[in-house]
Every structure is written in C-alpha cells, then in structure tokens.
Amino acid sequence: MPLQPYAVIGNPIAHSKSPIIHGLFAEQTGEPVSYEALLAPVDDFASSVDTFRAHGGRGMNVTVPFKQDAWAYANQHSDRAKIAGAVNTLLFQEDGQCLGDNTDGVGLVNDLINNHDLKLAGSRILLLGAGGAVRGVLQPLLGAGPAQLLIANRTTQRALDLASSFSEFGAVSGCGLDQLNDQITSGGFDLVINGTSASLQGKLPPLPDRLLADNASIYDMMYSAEPTAFVAWGKNRGAVKSIDGLGMLVEQAAESFYLWRGVRPATRPVIKALRKELHGV
Image 1: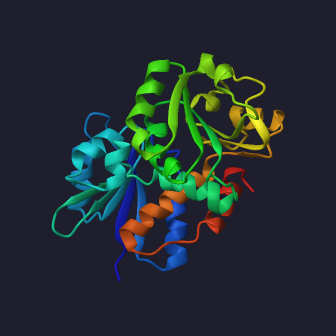
Image 2: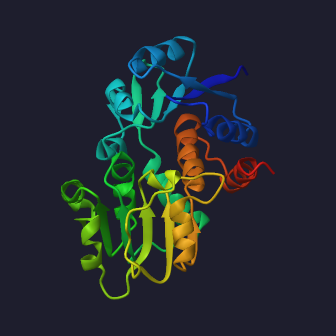
C-alpha cells in the first residue's frame, strides 16, 4: 500500500520532534504513514494547507503560531476543540470536509495519569498562565475531578475571565500571581503546572515558598534537553516528581494518530526513544 501523507505545520518548524514521533508510531503499528514538517508563511496558512491536501495529504498537526488559523480553516470541530477554542489537529475527510480537533489537554492528562501515576481526582492543582496553552488543557484537567483548580496569571483579569468561562466544567478559580500567597490553603497544592514558555528562557514568576504540599509534584508543559527553570525549581523545593512536557508532546501526538488511523500506538517506548534522542545518547 502506498504511504499516505501527514505533516506538522508551523513557523518555525525545524525544531519539531513530530516527524520522529509519528515515524516511530508508523513503524510500531505498521500503518502506511509518511510524515513531514512544513514551514508555512505566517500570513499564508490556508494556501499551505490547500497545497498539502492537493498532493494527497490526509491530516496535519498544527503548532505555533497557527492554532487559531487552523480553527478558522476547519469547517467541522470536535467538542474538545470548541471548548479549547483552538485546533492542533486537522483531519481531511474523503467527502472534502475538514475536521479540527484539539488533543493537547487529553495528552497532558494521559501523561500525568498513565505515565507518572499522579492522582488528579480530589487533588489541589495550580495552573500558571492564562494563554492558549492553558486554555487548551483546562477542560480535560477539570474532567479528571480535582477538588480545586486555581489559575494564576501575571494579569489578574485574564485568569479571572478564563476561570469564569470554564466554571461549568468544575471547581476552577483565578487570581493574580501577586495574590498567590493569599490563595494557599493549609497544606498547599498537590500539583503545580507551568503553562507559560518563560521557563525555557530561564525565567520564573515569583512563587511563594509554601506553594507545595507534602508529596506534591510539579509539571512544566515545556521541555528541553536540560531541565527547564521550572523543573529545576521543583527539584529545589522538594517536589516528589518534577516532570517536563515531553510526555505530553508524545501523548497528544498519539491521540492525533488515533484520530487519523483508528489505531492507538504505545507511547512509553516512544517517550523513552525521544528522551534518548534529546540527550544525544
């Protein structure tokens, strides 16, 4: 059977690990998939997608800065894409329709629960940031049943607005980063998730020393070859687990692969291989 084309589209895109991930998924499952990285002009997303489809493309992953463009391009949207307000996966259907989906949130939750054995139900979660990355994961996180989910952001109103728009899905509230100290109940948070890209630049918001509960974990949605600033912060503060976002990347890719092919690949061996590749082992 001839290989069926898929791709990840973004700008920049050369750094993307998606071709490695989906290549490993295809090898593992025996699915006839080819996968490439496509650089699109920042002002010409739709034409780039149209060209890929004209050459037989079956689906795409979408990364920055195009998740809103992908939302506008799709003429059908999954429920989770509607809730997230952004699309990171496109499925080109045989009838000419284009389905937009968002697999970021389920990727995060699967990584936390399945790969790191974290218990989200009944837990107290702090989520740092109020941008698109945080919006994309809120509903699946709330669906896991935490007792509390607090969004903290430098601009207080953005955190409050985001919490308000997701209040129907669970116990969620918002505050400014400068108000965090007043929000810490007895015992602190069981899980603190960084949803900003600041830690890749070695930056962290000012965080109270008593933020973490006993046996707490921290999770950075970003990843790099060396520990991010947030992962390093967690280790220094005695977090039981300090985790980066590499597993989330693989898990959201697996969800995309399942949408496209109807086959769910095993993720742990791919995470292990990617970690080795990241460290040049």
